[in-house]
Length: 364
Image (cartoon, rainbow, N blue to C red):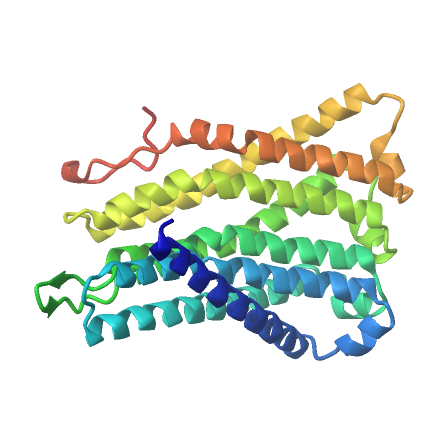
């Protein structure tokens, strides 16, 4: 048995449990602050499922984000335990890194999800979300919950990058300790990725909803959602969530390019700017490609089920049909996300930093 690994596991379990309970409690309290028009405890006692769905999405989204702090914290702790004779400064710096990782993850999580909540209400001006949720409109709650979870998933990589910048412990050479506390290129990369990912969430939501309106002309989605048509909510939520999954997978190649550029010694501001522009363009291309593939999957389902008119049944609030369509859409996204990542990686090539201005998109 490796007692060092066992000890590290015990410490990680303890930290994770304590942090989990603390984050759950704080998330619940913060949600109550964000939704002053709601009395959550009273609504939950009334069996208001809509309120419960939104709360679950908010709390689980924060849990997902804060969970990104576990790996960097454990890496820092492992470095500390592997040191034969850690001095007081090394111990202090590593403990500070661990605490800072959780604090940063928590603050960013609360801030981003709060912004997501505000932007959702801003984008859906024809719906009074709080009033609908108070009236136990489960359809609106499902769509809002999907939006919150999608935002959480897309910003996981940027937050993980930011936290990784605090991982590398101080370099110990003899008795000399390096005071380099943050890996600046990695931190800058994370700070660039974060707003791109967040505004990407908003863009995909708008494009996704507009696309749904185009492919389901027989449906007035907003009217059906106001009427608490859960089947329509399930269909819209699965479509948007699937697009988010695909785009999240496809952004990885662009993030790697940005990392290589920021770590290069001769990378100028022009190269960095064009690389950021490349990520934005890649984001748009990924979104369009994802929309096309999901749409093709839906058409294929309709060809196989000629005896079922899916859109008509969904309009009638046929939840069974909506669930089948939803699982097809989400399953398609899960199955093809790695293939899309590989395919779209072919359109992303590191710019030649020694030859001046790079091309925005270079195809090998």
